[in-house]
Length: 485
Image (cartoon, rainbow, N blue to C red; front, side, top):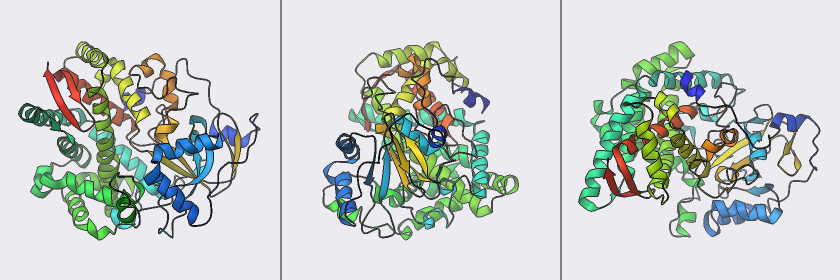
């Protein structure tokens, strides 16, 4: 764990420093004070219009870009789905779409994170054992510290077996993909990837072997997929035939009973085979047995399995489809550096591998939206202006657009594999984890407890892959060619 902390290098030659959110909220600013542009439109009609733009006519990326262009501002008012018929949901947000304004989302003195993981919409607590798990807790709630400390301890304990389980299960995944490519000239690798992730993460985080339960071993990853999908479908653009998507995907919350069997099977598995970790949650962190079980399952399913299932296809697809000399440079680095056996320490000697992972996180963060609610009235600053935010207003940042801030990142729309080798100071503005990459997760913030182990794991996967193969070809969903080392 101390090594993971050392993976946050000190900035060198950073961009012009951004004033901290707390400074911008408490000290006079030289920026002009501007009324937040935009509006929420007519009641009911405004939210519906924005919902149709967001999901149907424009899509999330164009939705935000067009409004930045329209208002000549990276801070503005708009609505974000879900909306009607979610009568209990308030879709009004203040969008913050540059690095400076976005950084306010992580200052816990001026914002809170209670029940805003996916905005004002919150899936039923039935999906998490009738418990508000850590992701929905604000730092001011006493339970937050218990759960965050438990999560960080789970990761610390798992680090003892992490690399061994990773490489063992990764070998099985690539064996499967290799066989498919040789037989069919192409392999859709999403299922092998998710099987690899499920087996590896269950062993590391739960301390159990999925093979203890034939049902879990066979279908556990599918159970997690369904559990995740039914919680989040009202907030996600699927891209199926419209208006069917609007009518059947975004118009109501899905009841828990549709996946209750899956969730009960998973939670029973954690209770039976993860006894040691669950007991530690009770005795060392003051959680009830049920709190330990359901928080552990959320860490496994939502944070780890869900996050990696989005991020790793993006990473592999980016590298597999690259037409420059990136793969050759990666091959050279991972075979010359890091010793004969991959370890966490190996990654220290692979700066290009690290940079590729960071650059992929910049362009394709696994969590597209970040939310926070104003804890009090404060003054928010963008690069160009200051804005008055009122207590209770919901702030929202679309991360992939924020991470293309041209005042921070040169050639912001381009993938530059060695970007973070050239300027490590840019890590101060890499916000994929609910905070900067140079930040430290703690009980006083909401930064992802697994921030460092996520990047280390992605680096190890790249290093393993290019020690095994001279080159790979494909996309974010399939591999079409493999050249073995």
